[in-house]
Image (cartoon, rainbow, N blue to C red; front, side):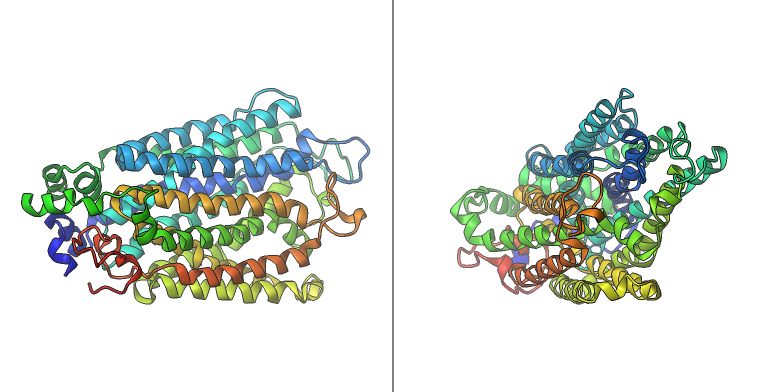
Length: 535
């Protein structure tokens, strides 16, 4: 039995009853994710406003919009930074420890959130360049938060409710998206009341009040607050026992730390420790044949499913404001002033978050340790495929005014099953199935594959979703394949994600050491992660 070779301190964590320190860890790690989501998604609230302020053309029938290359950079640069941060800080988390690197990423997020709202100069080029510069480094900090938050939570959790705890950290992303919409609503309402302006069609210049330049800056800078508030508590958390024992090889320190956390007396088991920690078969590297044999297919599964999921997930988020325009939730740009347009976009994001995004995350938290990761991910991809096709093929039917409600319901269900499905499980599983000394690195690789998918979705679909009719495209964009064909493509991508899910092992109810093979000395039990071992 694998459990016979597991360290006592780790076994104590696995069987610990749910208690206060679990919820403290969820809040501390979760507030990082709250900030991540706020910072990544709040940019879509203000891109229209940036276009009006910095790219206004006198005499134009429509308000100014960001040129295609600028829009792609503003929307995508944080995703590029996130990808780099996931790889670098994921690797660093295994080298220096989870806690130490965790503090670095948080400081980066706070500083760059504030700096992105202080973009220098008055010229469009100066403002956009500095905005992109700071959002790139903000993305690097956000990227580091992914593998570290997931790994810390998985290594603190007990095996019975580990999935729910990691999913709860990720579910804070839903509240971050919701908070972005609410902050936009609050400040745009204040600005609209304090600085009334005519609509664009009445007076194009006066429709964008000078004070609107402060609005987008405030919305971006608010993202620094939740991260700053949790810094002290992050620094007070001890290093995880699994890192201290299995990577740093300091069993005594791990036992002392967890005795305080669990509030029980634990003894360091030196003999078992020596066997488990020094076993040469458990010290293979990331690029070794042994890693490929044990964990190659699961790593392919976690990277490919996250990549495919994020193509669909991020492309939806980035052109959802255009879908809202098509169904009438957001009126034509010329019928609003600049500040009121921010209000309408914020309202739409808030409604979608309330109706589908937030509930989807918490359904995962409730059911992941009952249904299992595999079933939820497979189900999520399946329904995302079905609903995407249900929107896409009769798209001309859905955009008629009488059918708007049905459209919004199906669109919301797509989001619901993304979050009660692969958007949560792709985050959870990589934090469970890899060895402690490579756990943060492998989670970072999986997450970076996801962000590569997000970049494909964000950059590619800005162009792809454009109308085939040249007269109906956004300013500066070439004709695309249209929203309908873009949605069909996303449906196919979701279907492929469903197939790739079969490479991902089930981790429900098993200890981390059992999943990764770290407490098994028998050479024949080499691919524990791919088998259904007993608890």
